[in-house]
Length: 108
Image: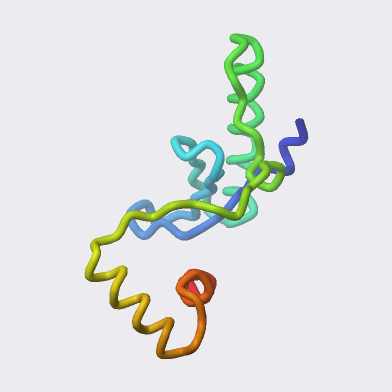
């Protein structure tokens, strides 16, 4: 497993007054540092140490998100009135509900 395939992110922490390095696959881990580069380096070192520890105790190591397979399908439960409103908006635009919701989700 290549640890470079994990999803790392660096952001500013106003509470701490420092940059924080994060790893999506290990949401409980973080690393604070004065610079973004140090935060990234720090979180990568922490992930490496945790993965080595998990290997030693034969724990299941999360696969990098970039290497996971996704079906492209998921279900969302919404209130009936929201379902109706979305269906009406899709019909007004002349597209399927699936295409309408897909566009809304893709727009973020």
